[in-house]
Length: 227
Ligand code: 6PG
Image 1: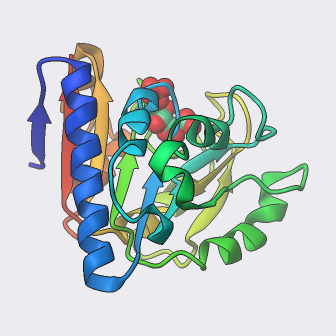
Image 2: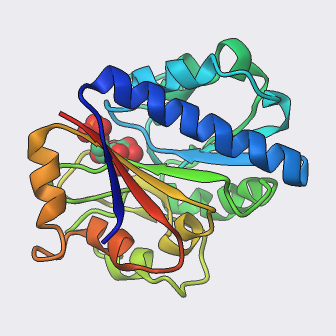
């Protein structure tokens, strides 16, 4: 059973998670001279990103990347890169180095090698990986009906990043794989609302992809939640 930190409201949750991430980054900067953070997109993290961007730490020593990306132009409103650039890579955090996951090819699969070599610049293990969760129990871009879901979830797979067709959601995706996500000092599973809390509670029973993160024992997972 993973630890769950619950808050009275989203404002308190966002501040506490931003402070926790900042503390992790500071401690890795002190211990190894650099820190790295992989974040998810979607609607949940926007205000938390703004809080994190204000935290005081040596951002020039921090690498930021995405857990997953929709295969859309980086200017699109659906781009996770745009979300991160507009909300996290601002203020103090504007000094961080960012590695995006959107390549130039029409098909996401044709850019996987280039993206994997871009990601290789990031110091690992990640200081922290922040995951979200959809109402279908997906996390990262590990969608329940994707053909390559077993490969994405294989903790012993060789690939760090892969393309996938979600089937039940728009756009091709590019996503970190399970072993890449687990290569982190800690994972935050960041969700809000009663509905998602219920979905998470029954994730194992329904074989939702997110259940694989909770079931593994390699990397500590903390669920961060507010109504
Ligand atoms: C994406 C995400 C995805 C997200 C969940 C939750 O690009 O879709 O990275 O995994 O974390 O879908 O999204 P919401 O926060 O919008 O509910």
